[in-house]
Length: 134
Image 1 (cartoon, rainbow, N blue to C red):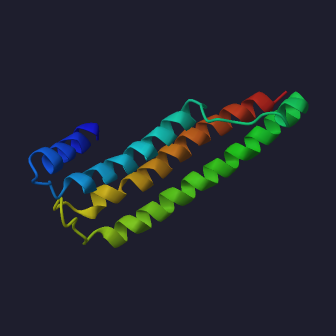
Image 2: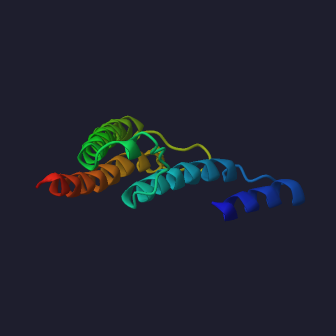
């Protein structure tokens, strides 16, 4: 993405011949990077959390609350995956005017992210349920 943006800036301001596809490619790559980044951070349990309330409850209640939050994330991932597939079906005939590629490739990140988030969170939910058992 950085190379694309640098190339676009170079062509626009140095050669004074802007590349028509550089902005769109940068935008699409930014969306893909954000979706992959969120999925990877979720997989490694690296999201920022304010834990002042959670730290003051019992260990069992804390685990139950974290399990509930992960179930909500699981539902969100499934929902994003489902809506992403519906979006792909609708975008199938569209072509990007500057890149001349199917918009399917652009929007494929959403169902992929939903699937990745669902599988990753499901793994964490199973692990948390095993920890709750006495």
